[in-house]
Amino acid sequence: AGSGESLIHQGQVTACAFARNTEKNILATATQAGHIYFWDTTEGREMGGSIDASRDIAAGRGQGSRATGGLTSGKKARRDGTGGLADITQYFTDLCFSPNGQWLAAVCPRSPYLMIYDTRLRVLLCRTTMTCAQGNIIGTKRFLNSKLDRGTDTGAALAIAVQDQEYEELEGADRKRKRITQAERLPGVKAGYGSKQDYQLWRVYGLTVSGDGRQVCVATSLGAHVFSSDRVSPGADSSTAALAFTPVTGLLTERVNVEQIVKMVKDDNWPAAVVMALVTGDAKIIDYVFDAVPMDPPDSIAACIGSVGLRLLPTLIATLSRRLRDRPHLEANMLWARLALEMQYQNLDRELHNFADGSGTEAGSSLRVALVALLEQVLAHRKAADSIGCLMRDNTHALMYLANAKSAGDA
Image 1: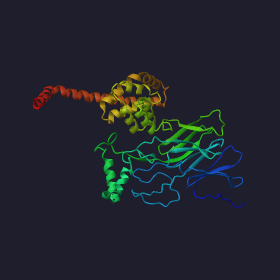
Image 2: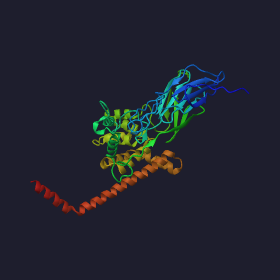
Image 3: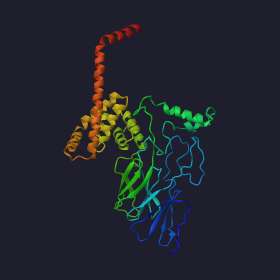
Image 4: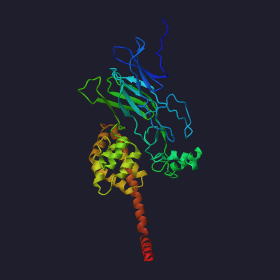
């Protein structure tokens, strides 16, 4: 047997995959520099054209990090303001060809995107967001849109504090950051509004493509995410038609993101904003939209509830239960709950009957659990209201005396 021959790369190889059902033995390799190369293993040579994906897989900055989330390949690891390493190189760790070999799927361990590349043109076909961009997941935000990193004319507000003479020492800037972070926390609150957030790290472990090439499954630290594909140009050539991958479950897509939701709220398009917020599943985004919907007239809330379909109904009921438990706006939350139960009564009754007959789906089971939690919150608030009412009735004369005494004192 002859000696083996290696395919020389300019950097460390992090992933490789063979194309299936193709005339040539095509091998795709990914390097630590963020590049994808294509090889003909029969002749042992590189095929023309590589893919530079360094900008495609750039993730967001981590919590407390002042370094950008861009690729820093080839640079030495340096210290930033928080004491961490600034070298946050992104690279692919898993590749998978489509069954016909016309496109290639790739994922990065710390990037929240699923990339699809055209193997013939060597271009990016689509990039789908795999997360909800939740505030408790580090490294998924690409823009400075949080309160702690709000932008100014000269940069981030907390970054300016490091340059100030009052905070020349980095420890002083860290103490200021902690004080600002703890300003919204309340002592004794374990969950919900005012509690300490439990941040998570986003990780992607691998992906695979279905046999027909219409679905892609990605293994992440938050579970398996399944995406379904459909060609946007049915009459176009199959080798050049663009692909549009959409999540099977309610996750963020290119058309449902935080920026679009904020735009809908500013345009007073409440129903669309509520539906998009429920699709994201992010509690902070949902609370932002729900608090922005005006109570007077109640038609605005009724229009929002009427626009919620059966698929998002369990999320709506669970959201109302959580808001009754955690949010301080009792009158608004009770109005939302009353209108939701009145307007969605037929859908709720049908799904619960199907679940009782054994013909229901997993959504029906989730709806039942959420509805029970909502009714428990409503009964708890009603019991508290009755208790307060009894206390007020027992002390009617004392309250009237105090009110009259205050009026006489003002006069």
